[in-house]
Amino acid sequence: MGKAELQTMVVSADNVKVRVRFAPSPTGPLHIGGARSALFNYLFAKKYGGNFVVRIEDTDLERSSRESEENILASLRWLGITWDEGIGVGGAYEPYRQTERLDTYQRFAAQLLAEGKAYYCYCTEEELEAERQMLIKQGETPRYLGKCRELSTKEREKLQAEGRRPTIRFRVPDNHLVILNDLVRGEVTFDTGTMGDYVIVKSDGIPVYNFACVIDDTLMEISHVIRGEEHLSNTPRQLLIYDALGLTRPQFAHVSLILGKDRSKMSKRHGATSVVAYQEAGYLPEALINFLALLGWSPPGEEEILSLPEMVQYFSLDRVAKNPAVFDIDKLKWINGCYIRQTSLDRLTELAIPFLQKAGIFGPELTAEERAWTRLLMEATQDRLSCLSEVVEHAQGLIGDAVTPENEEAALVLQEEQVPLVIRHFKQQLESLEVDKASLDVPQAKAMLKKITKETKLGGRKVFMPLRVCLTGKMHGPELYHIIPLLGISGCLARLNKLV
RNA sequence: GGCCCCUUGGUCAAGCGGUUAAGACACCGGCCUUUCACGCCGGCAACACGGGUUCGAAUCCCGUAGGGGUCACCA
Image: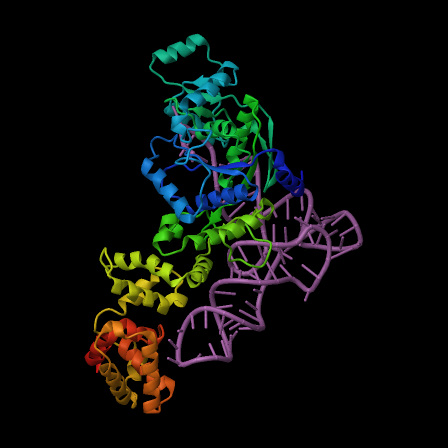
């Protein structure tokens, strides 16, 4: 079946209610790739008027934690990805946490057992490991050879009496072709020949992912499973269970991975991989979302800066690319800068405050004056920021009285002959004003600078550059008429006196 | 190693048998500007390779190479 035909299947799925899900396992923070999967599911649901559900797959008791669950949900909320149903919001298919659905899985496992489609396996980990090693040594695919497949009741009782707790294994049909019609990949065929019977229920009675997700997706009436490509190889195992239980398969769409610079699956080595890390680095949620959407999907038009509703409007699985995408931090920065420039000063101020607090510039509570100062700071730096965290540097440059020229070039500027004259005029201007920080605003600063230029009859650069270096020590930076009010009259005078 | 997926500029990507092979980021140049930045204008740069199919392949098929994923009582 061609991709175009598969696509019409999706679109004509109007007789089936679209229900998709994001099912993270709470074993750490929300990963960038997970966030994209969640986003694609969300977009798909909204596009087709369906429901987006969030389910927690916490069957790995060792690694799962409530804390991680909370963190993941917090990241989703921060990104603006909301869910119609699931953890925290409830719904008609409760519960949405797998460890609270154990009896359900047991029922289906019992059915498979009763029908001979699954069986108890008493092998120990050591035995299994030995088998694996042996196969590897022989150059074969490591897999379970089916030692416990035909255990008699007596043998089982004996093993049981030894204190062995069995797992339940699915009996994989021999030399059977499993065919998947993937919505992004097309037809994919797997041969069960090298698969080996796999565990569906662990010895502690907890189901394994490949089993639990089949049951849940069925019971929760999930229509489309959109997930990362790392699950593609698992899919035949799940498909086999659908078939064995006589369940209707959902449609699948496997989205390619997000890669690091070296083209391997994005991991810690490549830098930040969690959504919180980007949040803490000063990326705006709408920028991250926008960037993630562009990784593996492309809008039909030319515009790449898109709001969530716009993405919903344009989203479709047939515009999802098959090839993996390298995470390009430069592009993220650019997108983030675009959003920072679009953001109102009021919101920008609120967003920036935590960064300034964290840097120790402000305490836990801000005075009205500090807020106003921050707002001015944002006005001064808005279009030169690619990340919120960058304001810290700018703020730090405005604190304290000591200024040193950043380099030789800057030092040289101060040697120019007109400098004393310019400074004298500037000081006069400052001193003629009330020595009250609040009274010095941007229009006043502009007027002052204009006056100096006029009085000294000097060209712009000869006036502005020395002042800039005197006040900041730097050759580049925000507009002087922003810097002066940010420093305040006393701040400016202090810096001038220290330097000259 | 077996199985599976992928292959258009440095990166993201459009393209779905006939195009001068879009666009974006990055990079380079110019303009704007009292600096930098923003913005605007311009430039560099790609169909992995080899066979087919076809009047015609980036587009279809088969190989090769390269990359990736997966092979747990993890998800």
